[in-house]
Image (cartoon, rainbow, N blue to C red; front, side, top):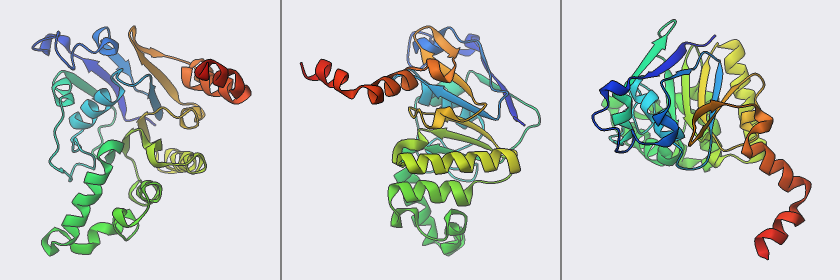
Length: 246
């Protein structure tokens, strides 16, 4: 059951459509997005607006722009907040539970928890209870990500994840798919994910959107560049090496 149904871009609110982030090609021709799916992936090349869009949606949901839930603000800001000013989120029903994972600021989020753990008025070491019982910085990057997914995630929630595969080996990406499935089926969670991983975007029944210069376009898994290039490389790596090293 999806909670966030639709994202509308109200372009009349944009103060200047010629400046970032309003001039990102993938966004320029986008009026609205159907998000009425339990699992939605945004894919595309670097710089096509995936992260900017997710950050804006997360901000509109009340999540800290640097990552976390509605009760966490690690003090970071981003120009994607300007994009949030023109977004309207359509819900049914409206929920307030969830989490925003931003891979590039995960260290800052973990450091924020460590600082809170030293303050008895902020919960002391109990702040770690929802994250596996110990500091995320006392684990490897990949272990910390999985600890977050396995311990903090649960319930009727919206999870917005920006490149969650960044610290995960292929095997742990498969483990993460199992966590997504458990949360979707048992807890009725919804996921919106920006990724480059052909493993993650293979999740059964997911809606995939590709961000490119023509807009934000629905695309089948096997039509994505990520799938086609990865498959072609694994089928014949020597052909790629000959082209790359010639």
